[in-house]
Image (cartoon, rainbow, N blue to C red; front, side, top):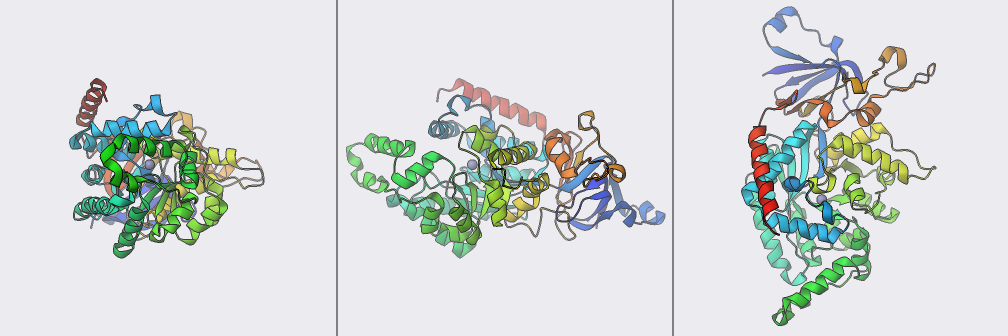
Length: 490
Ligand SMILES: [Zn+2]
């Protein structure tokens, strides 16, 4: 089996201490060994026989690929298109849905490819992606040999009366995707959010997920509008439903009875618990407005959280209590959310936002979130949140060879202090200089410093070049679609 020895000035296994002058041996699709370069002794004949290919990355960090714990790859084409309505979340959601209706399946597929390619270039090797047109991101991930779980999303389905039909429609799409699952790309289900999914539909999905062990993802506790809608049936979402009922006209009595939405008078997590969906251990996205009791409930039910600080901030939803999530022991991953809300599918930017916002929110008695904690969220944390921690998220023997390299030699990254003299991996009490590699990754590196991305030992990106897709062809497709959207009145 093909063996490759990767070497670099720094190796970050994540679940153990950083290694200076480190090396990772890959055999086939798995990690065979991790250690210091001088621990790997090969005699000349062995090397000359070509049994081991050596790739030296020099002044770089080798680490596991990032896990993007929440994205909407199909929406990447809408990057920068919704700025005019971003101060009104409901209008933003409705405009987005309108634009999506104007796109063909092929255009949505290229939109998803655009997101996948951007992810590969910024060191993301695994996506937890929600798709209304789930097939688009599912096919895009498969096409580019990237890892991921695609959660097929429900349509707008707030009526208990149509819950059976809504469930069947969802199940049909899910089963079609599941038939095509691969080793790298798996499928889940996403009941979108408590304000667009009926209680009965939540209950049906909960039962189905438990019976068939299906991964579930839900947007929850994202906005104050959602909170107000659930607690007292008021606010912009309630106004929208009232308006829709009026628009349905005189023949809509039966339907309107079902659509009448009685507020559960419960907070979001408590409401999800009531529907039994928490038993399916869902990945909960946002969780901005959660109480200590709700965090305890998330932890007790062994759910996980996708933390999306930039998206939460862009809409003015608030700052999620990251320190409390970490202290509760819940599995937390970092998610960029979709390109229309975050702008870039960039885990470096998302990680920086995560640490800075958490410190803004913290009161001074609260312990600061540390760079090491955030890098862990972006790797093993995301893997655990997806239930993939035995396969990915760290450089450990037997795990999948999903590995990235990040350069540290650009002038804007200098100085890079010498470890022995200054204590790169810790504070040097004599000089008080503290240059920690996690801090450097988070505060100095950007996605442009990623120079190599591989999944199951297969190179997908090297020194600025995507190896699995023609970028020029992609650029043409995207420009063509964007021009079409510009011309069409919504
Ligand atoms: Zn989302």
